[in-house]
Length: 359
Image (cartoon, rainbow, N blue to C red; front, side, top):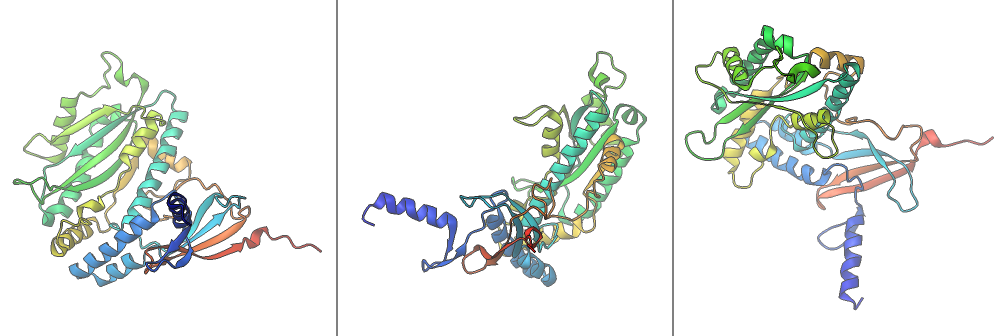
């Protein structure tokens, strides 16, 4: 082709459809699933695996490196080749720090929480939601596990306060930890905190309401629950609509964040030793720790919806399935090609459940 513009355009279409190696050879078709950044996060799992090797956790390193190397989809055929895809199976590693797994876990938590909040609003007309953030003073890495334990205990003490029990009809609680990199005396310390969604009755904000809890009272009650000798930072606000989300869904998206951010340890500015130390700290502190929980109306709604335990690790079915096994036209399988650094189609076959045998 002599036309440079046309040649560039052709290459772009070609590259978005096929996986090409460094020599320009076509390896195979690229994964067409654009609902989740598989390639970008898969690349991060190799960095995590290296850090686990440095930290002396070889089994975790193997699990991280092998995570999601095989993906299987149900596919609806389409004349232009862009039919809907539904993940059916994947070999997830389920590690708490895996970039692939934590992303899936957060999407699942947001979806399930939004369903629970919708159910509560349907069962209790006029329900409103508050978004509450509770903090504790930063701690060094060797104290992170103990601090998370105290944080969880303080939460349970808080929701058992008589005034809080009267005012709050249901709740969702999630733990999050961030690492301070801003310099100064707190540099390198860890900041554990709680994000919570609280369900309140419509009269909560009424003038002179006996249920309303002021900001200052939240601070004093949280300080009492913590047993702290300082005033911890507390943020409380009504959950408001954001974009296409209704208030409850906005709260769900905000609350169902990752427990940790992979930027804290998968950062090119960190040395291997420093990053591996952060990985080890997080791994030990989060081991077998319950990161999310429901209470009150939200717990009842989750049970009525037959929701699995929020700590359940099914990372395949993270939202409402759009393609049933008996209606999918095709089954496609993709394998991670290490040399090409991408997912490559390895199998495409007719769904045997749709095959009709004529007599």
